[in-house]
Each structure stands twice: as structure tokens, then as C-alpha cells.
Length: 137
Image 1 (cartoon, rainbow, N blue to C red):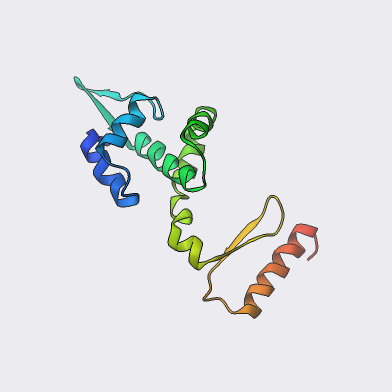
Image 2: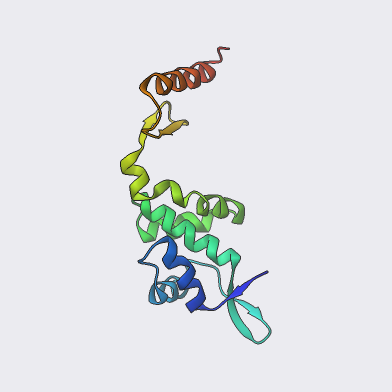
């Protein structure tokens, strides 16, 4: 298990989101957005688990969630779910949202398609997914 200082965590997270500075890391820790620090020897440190929490916070904030609702959401989720959310952070980068086309097929299926895909191929993908959802072969 890796251990990090608050400064190291801030440096890692600033690569993901420039707003994640040392002050923000300490604030989120203070208000309980992330789990309590872990003891490592006689020091309290951040771990990879904390990085997942911070990245999940970044991801959820990019979807428009408020800090209060993010905090409530994180309390209800398992560590595995938090890690899964943290790994989806890149899907919510503003450049991807602007460049790609997102299509809602059903309430449970949303496709994000690159503009590099031809209109014909895009339609085939949409039709194929729709057929699968209807149970057709």
C-alpha cells in the first residue's frame, strides 16, 4: 500500500484537475469527504484509497453534483463503486464532452461516439445496440 502526504496527493490530483490544490485536499479531508487518514508508523497518511475518493469527487463534480450531494453519495457507496467512479473521470473531461456526441438510447444505455466515426458506422452502432436491447439477434 502506497502512502502519501497531503502535498503529494495535491500534486497527483492537480494533474487531473487544476482546482485540486493542497488547500482543497485539506478542506475535503477536514469536512469528511474522504475517509480518515490512516496510521503509518506514527504518521497519518493518505493512501491509494484516498486517491480514489478524490478522483470520484472530481468525476461527480464534473457531472454537476454539489459538494453536499457528492458527500452523501460517497457515504452510500462501497469502496469498489468509488474506485469505479474514479476511473471514469476521463469520460467527463470538457474536451471530450465538447468533441464527442453522446446519445441516450434508453435510461440504462448511453453511447458516446467520437466524431471520427462516419455517420454510416454511427448509425450501424446505434441500430445494433437498439436491436440487442430489444432482444433481437
